[in-house]
Every structure is written in structure tokens, then in C-alpha cells.
Amino acid sequence: MMKKQYSLLLAFVTYLLFPFAGGGCAGLFCSCVDEEQMADTPQGNFEALWKIIDERYCFLDYKQQEIGLDWNAVYQKYSKHVDSNMSDTQLFEVLTNMLAELRDGHVNLTAAHDLGRYWSWYEAYPANCSDSLLRRYMGTDYKIASGLKYRILDDNIGYVRYESFTSAIGEGNIDEVLFHLMPCQGMIIDIRENGGGNITNADMLAALFCQEKTLVGYTQHKTGSGHSDFSAMEPHYLEPSANIRWHKPVVVLTNRHVFSAANEFVMYMKALPMVKIVGDRTGGGAGMPFSSSLPNGWSVRFSAVPTYDAQKQSTEFGIEPHYRVALADSDVASGHDTLIEFARELLRE
Image (cartoon, rainbow, N blue to C red; front, side, top):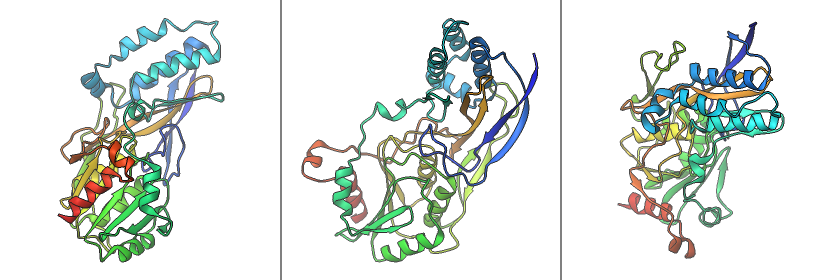
């Protein structure tokens, strides 16, 4: 077998809007490693993909413990479906089904004709969010500061809607939002349906509510090809913003579509004393992704750097809110958003 250089892309500071999409990258680091090249055949591509996940995916031990995943058994299961006469479409289907065993929204297989993805982390759950209700609460005269939409509700509660961490925000935008909401007795930050984006935006926003240096999580890095080969946990601290900060109560609204960088934001906020999380368990996505290639040129993205909360627990399968609240049909019928109304009552108390 020959040796070939495969390019690996590690998104240290970027989580993606959708688990299949490229995103606005702020600081990407590329490196190359010697990789044993398999033959460009259906079997060779299957072997290459299985090996990439076996040696570099960061949650194999965790998912064996949590969901009984046996990656060797997965090999036996799917290798039977690979033969030399199959088409690219058939091979793509087998490989995509194999990757779905990981139950990871950050894992994708990309070919010219299709994009393999795992979306069951949110598809099988209630949305707990209604566009029509959000339009009712926002009206048409809300303010927009880059990626932030905001207004003061009629009970003097500030409401901020942030739909994607791929939408850039700057310190000037944030200062203007806080100045406008300063008279309010509390603030709602609604990140329902936020699938992630740039982790720098999550850090910047969370820092507004941090009053002192706070431990918010940990990170590990792969040190070898074994499933358990990791560095020691490295602590991650959130530093208070050097600009204006918010000192009043905050409620963050979540649903299952909160993923990746948005999941990380919830993890940060849950570590702060003046913040409550309301809604559904988040969708998770606690692994920063690498990308690599198969012999036929298809690209595979996979979680390679695991992150943990302040209690050293994985948030790969989501973060539980302080208050589990679902969107009630009766409220929807009367034009009320159950989660927003619950948050308003909580802040009025």
C-alpha cells in the first residue's frame, strides 16, 4: 500500500449552523498526517472510513457506555453490504447508514451527489417553537443589531432573539442592546432553533452576564489512535466582558434544535448564578470537528475534540434546562408562547 497525505481540518473556534454545512470560520488550523491509503474501490473506501472513525472519532468509549455502541460490531454489520459491483449511490448509502450509528449531528459524509447527515437528534422531538408566535411577540418595530433582534416587552422585560451564532455580533452591537434594555427588570435570550455557528460569538455574548472569572467547562485532545487516548482535561474559564455587563436576572430559552456552539453557550450560561435555562433539553453536539478524505475524494467530517461542562460531564447528548417547559397547544391557539410567558413570570418574581 502507498502512503498519501490527507488534509485534516480542525475547527477549533467554529461550530456550524447545521451539522452538514460549512460555516463562517474564525481561525482554522490545518495540518497533514501520513495516512495509509486504501484502494479506491468500494471495499477500500469502506475500510478507510471505518478506520478514520475508529482511530480519530472522540466519543467511541462514551457512546459505548451511553448507547451500547460497538464499533467493531458496526464493521461486521456493514461490511457485508459492500461488494465490488455496487454503484457510488449504493456505497454512499451504506457508508451514511454506518455513520448514523454514531448518533452525532457533527458527522457528515460529503460527495458530489449528496450529503450524508444524521438529524434525528432533533427531528424526533417537538419543535417547541413557532415562527408565527415569534412574529407576534416581536411585532414589526423591533430593533436589529447585527445578528441580534431585540425589543422591550410590555411588562418591562427585555427580549433578545439570536437565531444563529453564524451571524456576527460585535462589542458595539452588544453595547447598544444593553443600553436599550437597561431599564428592564430582566432579560430573555431566545436561542430556540439556533443550530450553532462561531463559538467566538457564544463566548462574547455569555461574557456579558459573567461577573467574575468562572469555570464553565473542560476540553480534551486526542493523543493516539486508541479509543481512550486523550490528554488530561483542560479547564475553560469564562472571563467577564471588559465593556458593559448585565447584572439582572436572565432566562435563556432552548429547544432540541439548539446545537453545537449554541449548546456550548447554554453550558456557559448554566454555570452563571443569575441565569435560568427554560425549555427543552438541547440537541447537544459537544465535539469540535475534523475533516478527512476517502480514496475516492469523498469528505468525512467527525467529532474529534470533546468538551465537557464544569462538572466534567459530556454534553454531547444535550443539556437539561432548569425548567422543562413545552409549547402548549392551548397557548398556541390563543396566540401565546408558553416558554416566553413562563420566562416573563419567572423574571417578574
